[in-house]
Length: 134
Length: 143
Image (cartoon, rainbow over all chains, first blue to last red; front, side):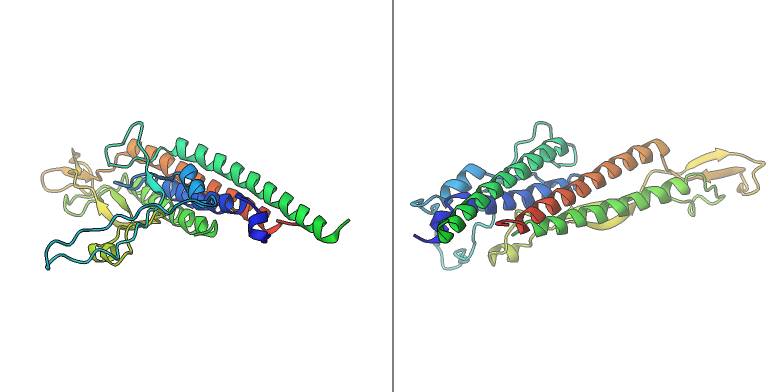
């Protein structure tokens, strides 16, 4: 049994939480940027992809029906798992960031990060006590 | 992408908001700078924020839109609104027709802008503080 499997889903959850924190921070930093669209990570989907036995999301390929078409095979989905938020009320400058929503989500995400940390710490403690055999 | 990049993103937001506060201070300080020449009067300035947008070639090369974007101040524009023209023939700076020109700064607008900038700055500070705590907790993992 590898250490990675002993940790279960919690290390993946921690990485996903950290990634979501940076995305929410980007939203808040761009709260006054015209035409900026608020983004968020679909945490449930990200966790489902990290589960053992999960299938990778299907890649969409561009069809080349003409020699003049550019090869778009190199276009990678950089925004994987990240999508745009539907605003309650968009502002006139095209910005869709609601600072209160983002702040709340960031705090919730930080708490969930600490929960994952606590779980991971517990796993490490059990592994350590199993090694020592006390 | 780790929690450390929160510091870059929030730092870019703080520096952008600082520039905004500086420009507001300049507008308010010059709000009463009267001149006798309509072409040389102070005009209200406003910073323009933008987030990093990838070019077409960057998208083709697979360097498309990143989920995390920093803020940049792409420029500071002067307001096009006409300066206030006031008839004050006794003013030492008045032109031949007796008019002086005041800047097109709206102090109420600037004050509202200042509060908005200050709130946004505080939000970014909060982000940095929370991320610092999370990182310190992560460092203490397993102890």
